[in-house]
Length: 259
Image 1: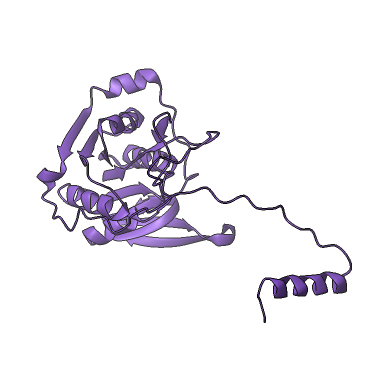
Image 2: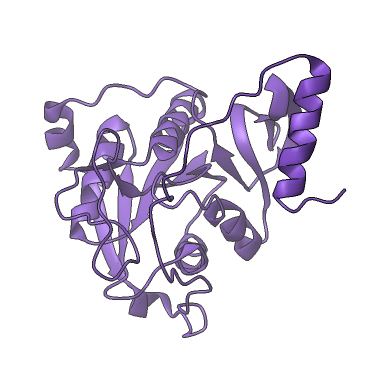
């Protein structure tokens, strides 16, 4: 079972006072700490669990700068066998461009299964996994909470609204987007990360992938990022049902709702 797992390094923004950058296209990230995307952490763990059960290998892959090798080293320390970083240089990246890069790179590999996180903590796009699957022409499923591989198929549990699960069969090779909570990611020690430095970590650039200019042209452009405006608190309407209904009707009319 050869598994490719796509991961991303994202800023840690919990309990941090964020500031908008000068261009108003994002937040200031100079002083932010970075970690592996939470959903991707579960995807790496699931890949390693499947390898331990079925044999094979796990390859971790990311699109980013040299600083992003940190999350690849973590994946290697968790049990991945090799890692690949694709350096985008100064190219502007969006979900489409990242998906085209990953599709091209993974298309040259031998794989039975591709795992991604459901979404990324920074942009919450949730689109890369499905676009990679479409680009490779393989089956895919998202928001996966359990996987069982049997007879060339993946029997997967997909999280639905209301606490319900849907059980499906997906023929391999396939791509699955992993939901948090599918497992308990193992602890990675400093010693483990040091030992992981002995494992293979390849670096390649976009030119070697042979992507077209159309592949590298973003479909999404962030024009402006801003904080939500401060508003007054909620107004509590009290009284019996008739009085509350009348007050609501008057408020709706004031706001321009005629029907």
